[in-house]
Length: 192
Image 1 (cartoon, rainbow, N blue to C red):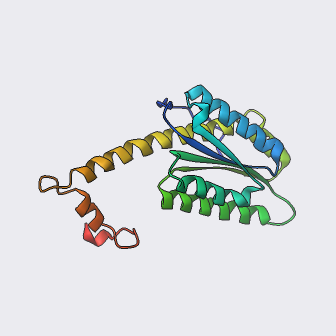
Image 2 (spheres, one colour):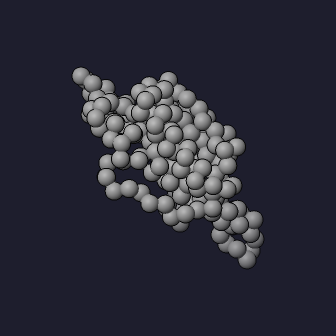
Image 3 (cartoon, one colour):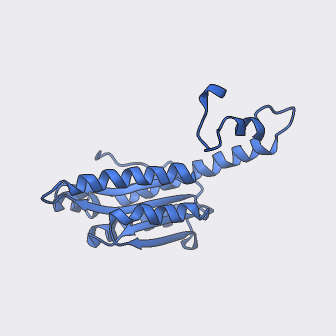
């Protein structure tokens, strides 16, 4: 991970709804990430009532809960927070890769941005620096979620306009859009 901080571009966050899934395992680190994430969302103007936080036993269980929150249609973005520290085996690598793949799949299938805030490190000192120390990853995950949620809202609005203008004057209406996808929702580039 880069040590360069992600800077906020400033979005109107008052109407955004954010779901958070935070693991309980390595709770000292995750609780610090969660606190920094919640403070950043508050500072950006997200009302407390627009944030829902669920706790998962560990990192491996987070994609399931993220998928449930995203599928509900109640959230503009979901943030997943967990910390995985290397042990004597490569289990941490398997866990990091499988959860990253699962979270990406949730995001694509639900069309809700899922921010992968699962920090995978080799040592407790690295976890300390990223979660409690000077590298404020919780803030960065919140900023990423706000930006992606704002983009999602804008793009959904654009698609709604396209779908509502399905007529002879608008060849890019819903019928043409639907024809671009097959029955499984997968793109058929040869149709473009």
